[in-house]
Image (cartoon, rainbow, N blue to C red; front, top):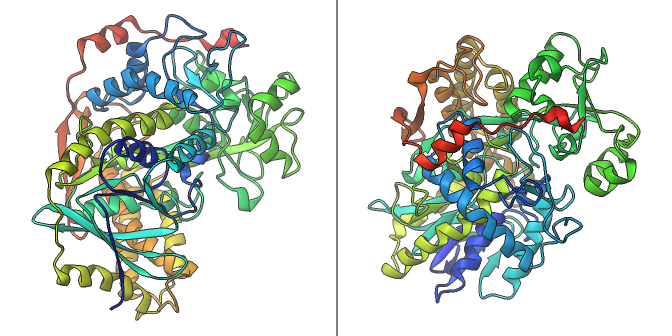
Length: 576
């Protein structure tokens, strides 16, 4: 068996905002750091985060502060967030945003020269800093430029297929080079997972192909870490519905933050009925369900959407503040400055993921750390728009501090040859196949099952039907067709299927267990939020034999309780 060995102190899996910010922090030490990503360097999923990054500067609303930001985050998270994680984020993110500006990130500015801030859904004040509607792209580019002047090693278009552990400690990983088909062994002291979430396992998603396919949670679970809140999947209210190749592509919340309104085919601004106070800028789960209900009632378009209209706003301002959306729709023959856009909900973000200690980023596996969308706990049952970019830069820096102390304290491990060969053999087994099932077809079927049975509105009956079908898919996945070569679309799909199936099973099992509605998890047969369910669901055991455990959430700090009690809540009607 031929393979190449790469030695480093720290392996970072994922080259998006979280991975790169951690790498920059680690570069300040004598540690050798290697970042690997599935795409070309600089083209991670972070570039698709459009609308902005939250920081309570109060540049436009001086009343805002970190405590109110934390209160908003907990409230919209259904109070099952990790309160300490929320506190850390809201306190630390302003410094991270200032740092990005110092590094050259060209945020939109006010006339006075401070960072401009816009409204985002379910937030008490204007706290979302932005670069037009390409904020993630600007932040990723800023971090990439910063990395180029460091000693951080980078390897692009690499897929990690297994984290190697010995006696409960992460000691390396195996994977392959997507271009050359070369098998790779990584020998390291510590691993940082920054590999994103699992929304692409749904048939309609705002993610691009081959990203957010559940790699991170699956790798961690296989290594012995715990998963948490897997039932909490965010459905963004507005994705494109046509043409077919654009289905699910994100239409940023910034459109509604800049004054966009939602209408059904009866020209009814229906959010007046579902959320008369917050209207289009209510929490994402509530707006998504409202659109779902309108379409279900027969008030949707032929393509299965509703209308999003910003044509009443000044056209020059629209082109300046959401240029990406104007460009995206003009490519398909629609001018948002003068015409309505057709939109419908799309799978957008995973609140669930790997359980970590947010003080350190540590998982249950020694030497395995995690940051960003791959983790669970910060966002609870529903994520505020603008908090994902805030999370990756804040905890990328924060987690790296604990990681570097750990990596300095341990010696270089030596992975047994049998373990290495076993890990690499799994890659060859996927290539060699031995069955009749096409992995791409199985992956597509899985996406349809999840969208139908574990989507925006759920029931016990539907979820159990979905679980039965997923278990059937797991059996069929053991008998996939042979693949001619590793550097192929079919092989990538086979690897993604291996990751996606245990993740999908965890989503559905957790959704069956949570017999209430909270945040993004809406049970049509259990519509109320229940006090007894103010808990997190952990997934333990192994991918083959998952077990669920309920855990009470931690207490909210008194400082944040006071902000919750004061109940800052914006009436969005004054924006009309």
